[in-house]
Image 1 (cartoon, rainbow, N blue to C red):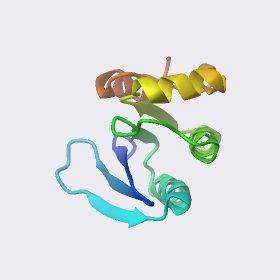
Image 2 (cartoon, helix red, strand yellow; image 1 turned 30 degrees about the horizontal axis):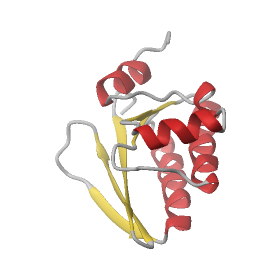
Image 3 (cartoon, rainbow, N blue to C red; image 1 turned 180 degrees about the vertical axis):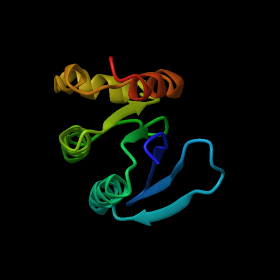
Length: 130
């Protein structure tokens, strides 16, 4: 399991948040829709559960996200810290112009491993030296 990568795709909805979670390369995905404020908790708990199973690599796909609230920026930082603290690797992929602007304005872009494409994010989390 250590070579597996859990991919979480965040899909914003009006008054809701849909999360698609599954392993890179697998066609099966688990889809959950919740209130936006609960989405961050669901992702955190899934990361914890996966790490207990030996999965240490995580990719958060933000390609459908146009902007981030301060709460969601906090979640991005928290997920990254959780993965690092437990010896894992996490990267964010598919950053839109709006997400780039928010991360730059809050200076979070300097601390989070964020990439424009999924392939660059995968390279980062699979390469221990980067």
